[in-house]
Length: 439
Image (tube, rainbow, N blue to C red; front, side, top):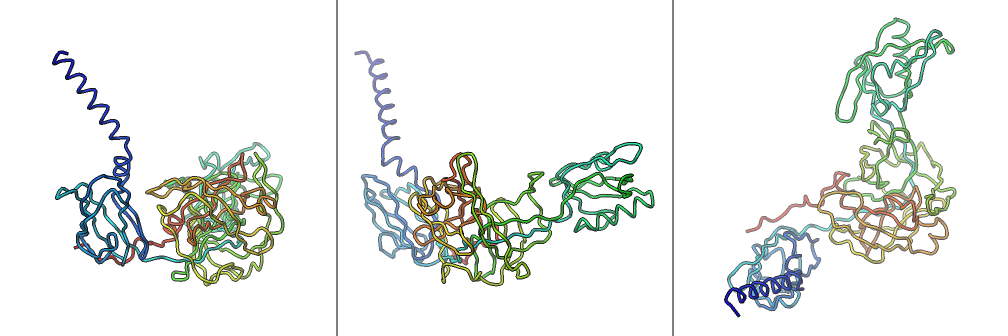
């Protein structure tokens, strides 16, 4: 065999060995080690390396964690066995993994104070006032000689939000009507400020006289409020903040998110349920209960739900104590429960399965796929129905997320989002605890 052939075979052998090493369990375990680990105080995390070597792990701050039960700056480790990290107090530390004296990996560990909130499940009514008035359509005004839409001529689009007219902030439709009438009688144009996405545009609109109704019109269909029902997700007794719905409230005509001007949540009572079927999601039918008694306000409307403040945890609850929340990386595939109302105001627990967890480093609405397994709920609703969005998801005694969307072609299944993202949108920073500086 020539030297050249030997080199080719040696190169091929090294390539095969490299491929085998890359796909080996030890390599995969090591490659999957995160750069950062978050833990709640008192919880345990295991690192599985499966490396057939010994070494050590050095902790920059041994007051924060123990390594395999040892409270020391550096602990000897057999990497063929799982390494246990036991969190002791809130703070930050860095773990440097070594083989001999050679560092092979540095992992930052952030230990957080455990955070608890009350799970929801209560059916709530939503009364939302827009920040301005929303344009939802154009219409023609019959002046007797022609049919025109002054709003369309002024280049006002469906989905625009009217913020000001003649320099005055607009809060409701009645205010618009008065200003349009005054301008029409004076034969003057209105100066209108509209919000279009992130852009603000000023236009001139001259009202047209409706010959049939003898009134002045803008040729626009507008809306200043929205109402509906949903489910409370959580209540934080420390901050009095709450989150609900698990999805954004959008205008039914434009499909665009409603910008909150003012709003309240009230109690609601489920009166009946339209069972979901393939291709036709079901729906909870509910009525507002004690509308004069406001449970809380509405400050934000985001892709993760509605948020605001409540004076107290609603009375019709299922638990007496707040539950700890789970970090996104702590949510697992397997059995879980949701809390929701299917009759009256009674909050009940129902069994589900978390069939897939989508690991997310940044906020996104579709964090897990869930499937209803509870025979009672399947019989009553067919699975996930409209109005159930926001129902908290509980796993191993922790609040892990909320129901957000149903699969149209399979009402037994749908998406859930992580509770961490809802807390973040509510203005609750679970990572903002006081930390010990690593030394």
